[in-house]
Image 1 (tube, rainbow, N blue to C red):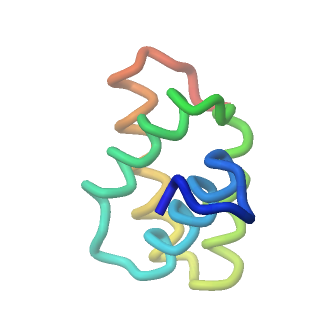
Image 2: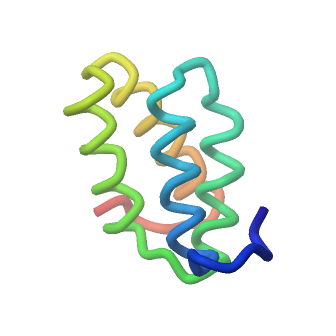
Length: 82
């Protein structure tokens, strides 16, 4: 998927994070994709803002769980959450 034309990997990773957050029940995948996103050059602010969008459009409970998974990745990478 990440080698397809049309979206650069960073944008694809942001979309993946948003979809996983909206689906729910994907905390482990969100943590993994957050770590991959950071490796691809996403910033903690960008990732956090995606989860704010998830909260707004998929509901606060899913957004909260998704953000906890993001913070788990930030902790593993020793990154301060914005």
